[in-house]
Image (tube, rainbow, N blue to C red; front, side, top):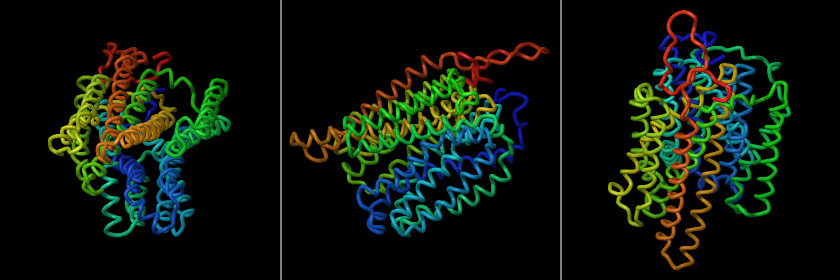
Length: 502
């Protein structure tokens, strides 16, 4: 059954669907904000609660570990138990954990609350796209909705850095978590009304306990391994051993899925060129964009001397550019030229944006050297909605939550790997330049240029995948009804159903 089949939920009133979109966007914004807002307040949290340097990293890592490791499982449970039920449970848990985090009086209490926030964020985020594509089935409307969803994710990091600094300076670090309470309460109340109820397939349709343990353990261990490379390096026995164990668990998961009667993740979804290609593109794109979202902010603070608030404000033109494109023109362009063409255009713009950073001098001028990149990064407003649409287009109705969870999982894996690889290589280059007698500013600048170069390479690889793998996406898979002429193949890039070998 496709997402656009007659068995899908009937279109709801426009106002109710818009409210549902606002709810989904708000939940996505909370999840993204919580990953970035805390970074600015880390020094204050460490001094107030007495964290050790190693323990402090788990304020961030605990959230990332739970969030990234549980997305795939949460997406499948949404299909089985009902996506609305999973979404509401996730928001409620995230809200409760935010209260505990805001009231934390010890390191253990805060880390436990952050882990619980990650579990709640995974539960709500995993099914968000699945809910969205069943609500918005008409191509133009779906593209607009995906544009809103993409904008909240792209803007969240920039908003989080600014908001984190403001709340910490004006009030206290507690408020970076307590700010979730009014947002979460309103989101939860609106979700009860706006998101359509769905019964799910029931646990009998696919309770694969072994598969769930294998993939959750493999993903969590993999993310934990990548996180640990900052302290132990990529070639250490610890890193290599844990990476091998993670790969073994993931391989065992795929073997299990090929043989299980009711697999957690039916392998048929990976035979869709749209699902497979879009997830690969997204993983490469998100990994590359770490060079922009984090490295550029660090460059402004450590090389140019901006403070946290100034660097956050300096990043706002990028958020505005992405928002203007994602919300204003992406839907019309996708409807006219097709999602694949718009994705390729967006990736080309992003590649150019990072390429401009390769010429950035140590004493950069914001308007001359940084602003062009901030504006050209608007390509993300084209690439992200198009990628999400292509990735979800190949999902059957009963797999929408799972495919949504998979899409979010590859984003988290891309972010974790991108952060670890680019940070490690940039730091290594900086250390070598310092040893060669360069000034700290020159050494840091050289390290960041390495990160920008890798970002360009990753985006170029994503562009190749989009051209080669996604070249046939968009061919309808369901036969035309007996009456009337057969509809021409759509050029919007959204397939109406998954097809074996597509």
